[in-house]
Length: 126
View (tube, rainbow, N blue to C red):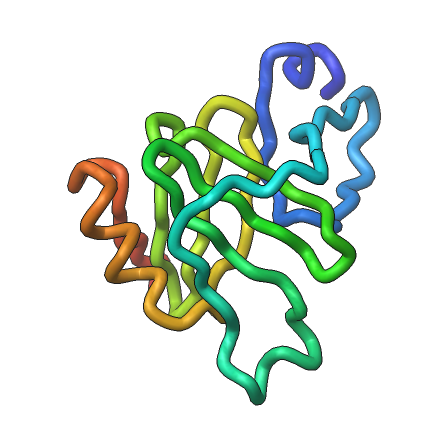
């Protein structure tokens, strides 16, 4: 199995730790620099479990977690996937995947700034 892992990218949600022999972890870098742009917050009733914010700037998107860690990706590398009521922001250059379902109004904003091919609706198999 480890022979094919050398050329395979497996994307998992942040925090997931799959136990695959021969695999290595390569995650996106995090900073403390917050870009300027339109800020999206989770609704008040969801802020206990999600204290982060999402910022959509002119050419990038930043996900700021509750501890102030910032993950920024260029809009040119962003893709949004809706599946089973969950909204995922994917960084196609690094393979990062972030659940952005909790952020009010973000779907409409991302749909307006991304090309149609970068906003997809996935359907599960029966």
